Image (cartoon, rainbow, N blue to C red; front, top):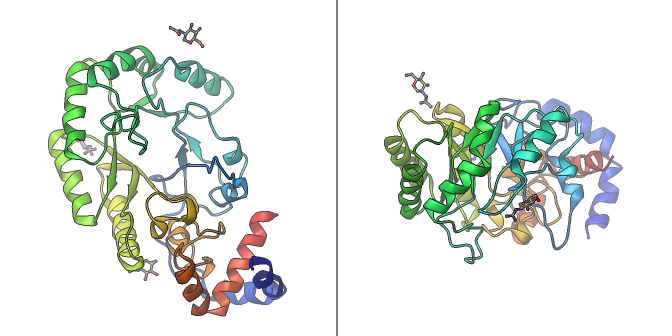
Length: 324
Ligand SMILES: *[C@@H]1O[C@H](CO)[C@@H](O)[C@H](O)[C@H]1NC(C)=O
Ligand SMILES: *[C@@H]1O[C@H](CO)[C@@H](O)[C@H](O)[C@H]1NC(C)=O
Ligand SMILES: *[C@@H]1O[C@H](CO)[C@@H](O)[C@H](O)[C@H]1NC(C)=O
């Protein structure tokens, strides 16, 4: 179906691109470009790899400036694009690991490693199936002192463990910091799944608990929502994050195809064919006419195609460009 749709459209490429140049120059940008805060949380599809999608994030003109992949080593498919992204290593859980050696190795190879991230959702049980590393605060503190803290002496900025958005997350973080009172925390990563009021309140709670801290939102989405609230939330959040001094950096949770999204299809930046959704286009500072679909859903995609022939043609052009 994709081939049938795109073949005739691609032949219109030259014509449509010149029209596009006129109409889309500055129609829908959200935030500055490049955006020092905006990054990529890279979640590859391990069952059915789609490495061709990865080029989307590093294409020329991408406002993204950094990424993490929950691992200590960079992802090869995000290297060497027109827009280089700064890699931020993470020590995901409490295990014997190579974080310090890997950082040393990357520095020796000339990588710019300014930051590392601590454990992922340690307050979330490891067997919950939702990405928790399930570490008791005291064990996390011991592992931190051994495997993360030494990087502070090398001038690397350390992100505290990223707890869940549940109230138990704050309790966990306070207990961890009490057990790690002589440890270094340069910023506090946070996760949020919910609506905008909840997000603003969440940041308020953490700002009160940790005054004068910088917060990174390393996972964020209004999950499993219809299209309109998903897009509303996206727009409000981007404006808010870009404006708030206490928000150091952020990554939208949805840099994967909608059919493998565990936060619902409408939070995804890519549709099921790997084309940008509207929020995907906005996240990359592109006009929504360059998106392949309004959202990740099949039904919504059909509606999106109906919106404008120019939009569809542009999508074909963009896909063609990525493949080059
Ligand atoms: C969200 O922002 C985009 C890009 O600026 C804009 O085109 C769209 O109308 C906005 N949508 C909502 C619901 O505010
Ligand atoms: C931890 O990993 C290192 C490097 O892989 C290895 O040399 C060492 O024996 C491991 N230590 C333990 C306690 O497993
Ligand atoms: C911390 O306080 C200093 C001095 O008031 C201020 O310049 C800085 O922006 C604050 N940092 C954050 C993250 O709020």
